[in-house]
Length: 186
Image 1 (cartoon, rainbow, N blue to C red):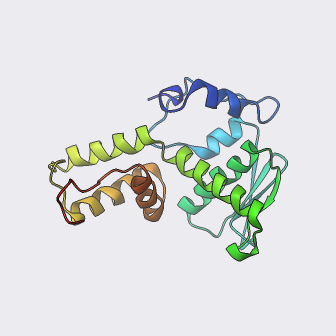
Image 2: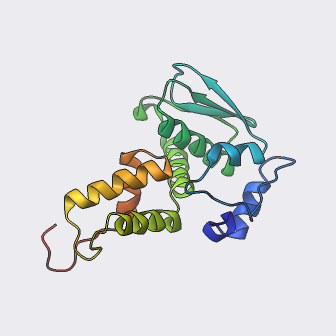
């Protein structure tokens, strides 16, 4: 599947306006997951890794700082989150450990960046493809999935998309996937 089969041409064009010399190819093949590091490199962002930062990451200009002591899925989400700030034209944002430290405008920006990151790393098309692939490979009945099967599916999809289990659970909920049928008690 290609980037422009997952994201709109307008979205890819907008990403390409973030930095001079950006060259994200809409025809680029996506091999199972969104390679956020490759995308950032093609958009002329630099990634700097630091250990035990205050917060998981920050953006300053075209440099994105990531806490290298965080797990890989957290680092990937943070990279996408900071790219979300760049999409808002915020090029100097520090992540705070305590959500109470944000004022109203900052909280709004954080919600945008989190939503952006989730949609970038877990686009609906990739999520659905991954879910269907797991169901098929594990020979499950897609019309009658129990909670343990859904848990297996989410674990496999999180691994395939290189995101945390919590992130994929939240995304699947927002996409209204695995909604109980009318009359079921779930």
